[in-house]
Length: 233
Image: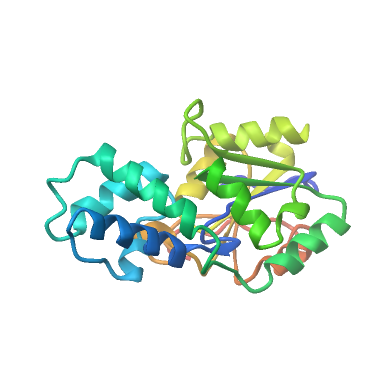
């Protein structure tokens, strides 16, 4: 992981599992889709482990794990999920503790802020609006067919351009190895929250500069000498 040599100018923050617990909405849409194709529902915790790699990956994993769903057409299932998720999005999601406080503190200290998520824009922006987080951000970089998803660095670099900051002047905050790898490839330090989804891995499985328990810890940490934490530490 990269160390900070001076105070960063901007903070990039992941959405699902880092700021918002969106798994209940996603699981509701998944299970509506499964009911439509005649398959039994999946538990919330199972669906939670599929989040973070984009909608296509989510639907593929659901079809692979749901009993009797393996023969379903992936494209049709994806279209079903997308319709259901538009209806479910924001209904049961909640903001993790310390997120709004942390974002407010960072803005007050003069950091530029961007939300960087693999979630497509038609879901990401309404979710931020519904939970009152949109005013915190100067930019939102979302899953887009024109850009590779995290762990590719393209979305992070797009956010940097929109903020007018160089990657080395930014830090990434996420909840999984997907975020850690994207940040490393973009050339910026990364902080990971101990809660979140972790893409099915252990909460401390990914190397990062620091683990945090809440986003409101970050403003103070950005003023301190940098520490890199290995996957085992």
